Length: 446
Image (cartoon, rainbow, N blue to C red; front, side, top):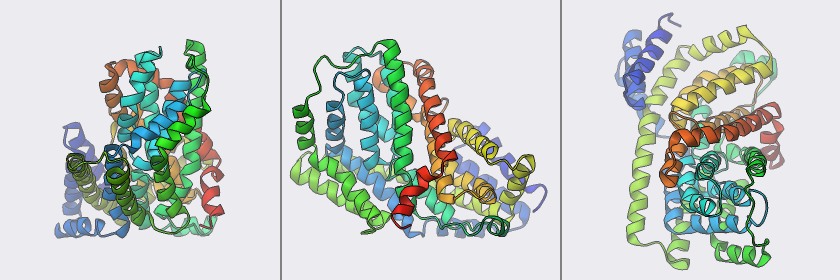
């Protein structure tokens, strides 16, 4: 490896970010600079970029984005939220707990943190304010729970992690020390994400109960009504069936995640147009517009991040970084603490998808050298980066919750700190006990 390559590659990248360049521009220019320094033909950059979009699993990305947009337009998301709200009852913090559950439900059809926050927040934040919860608290719990959207499958970041990690082979030294590692697939990641998502939601629910008990946020004056729950489930039956169809088909092996995304689109079109009759041409065009904009932005970053990562791998930069980290300590728990701490900081400043594409070639070799399963590592990475949605300065969920509630981002950020602590605690539990992520895939024969 050339001794100046790291300085040129990362120096140009961070320098451009400081100047305010878009992340795709920073990645592209720094990669081109490094290639010119190494004497490579710049046409190689175009070839790498083109090959990055040639994978079949990548088709799931725009398809899942479209499915999530259509489900919101077709009224499925509102019915899922009504089911969660019916479960609130007279319990302490019941309505805010229902908000967490609504984000959990919506995450199973969305795959996006900001989309989950927006869809759930539009209904639940005003409802919590009407019931006596502070507007700041209502916004903070929604922003925190919105991060569950990328943990509960199907998840767009899981698709990106899977694509990024599939082409990376474990180092020979790692195989000699720890044996063969399992291969990475998006299906495995989807299955592995289910229980960690429940653990993350459990941490938020526990913190919500403690804080609501201290603040005196009691539940509804009406008793828990089985009739009301059944009525909400009846009206939301087709919405509740959506995650069952999508995830059931993937988990049973009936179709791949990419095929599942297409099934989700046609299922939503049928339910929205024929059963609920809320999906009209205007909403359909709006959903397509949203999908085009989001997918185009992600693919642009993917082009440049693939070239960036390929330069790192071809010049053994990840090996040098792994060696540097392992020279500090070989204690697994300290390595996890360093990795999680670094991901938390990066998540505060960088978009999740870009962070995954940049960091997987750098950090996955470290995981292999420590004997960490790549599926387990991917789940921990995505869980940790999900906290970035509720932490400034990037904190996309904070901006959305602020816009809905009318509360300043600073106030929401302060009230979201306890939820961030609960999420970080849950992440360490998931990291220390790998079976939380690996038990279900193993049970299902993966």
